[in-house]
Length: 159
Ligand code: PNS
Image 1: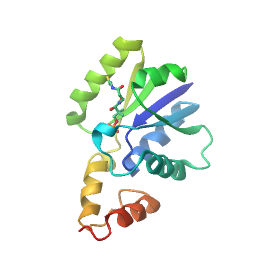
Image 2: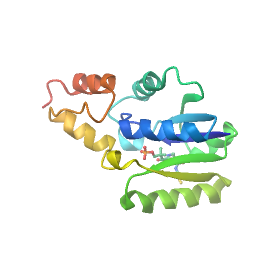
Image 3: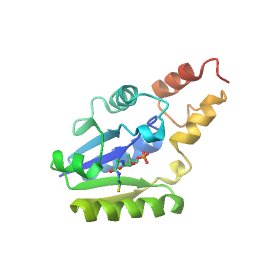
Image 4: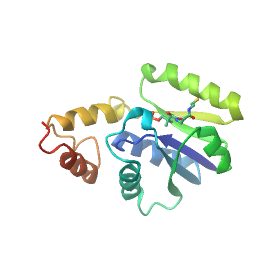
């Protein structure tokens, strides 16, 4: 069975990787779908975000990396996949995720399966990691080394 794990991945964190690995134990194929998401004004371009995800999942058979623009349900339909996997860190994630899950089901009968974050990752977010890196903090415990390096490079001279 195939599932789509969608997100902005700006950038991918150890929390995302945990969900990818755990989803992959339950699904033969996991498609990590990077959203263009211009509304979020991402720090990294779509190509950079895809590149980082690809680097992180390299060599894992059954984990694909792709991108999409527009509605997630349209993308899911185009890939002939009916299941989305989402990570939930805390109740603060839940309201919006519930709304999207119900909307995606209403729009196209696409199902959303929630995986709860491993407690050691439940405080992790791309936004916080970016803020820490922007001000010169050490993010090496939260993202893969290559991602930490790219963030350092991006914020060089800004702090
Ligand atoms: O990593 P994020 O930013 O939490 O991911 C959010 C994402 C990309 C999964 C969500 O914004 C999304 O599904 N965007 C695609 C546009 C869409 O389908 N919107 C309607 C949702 S009901």
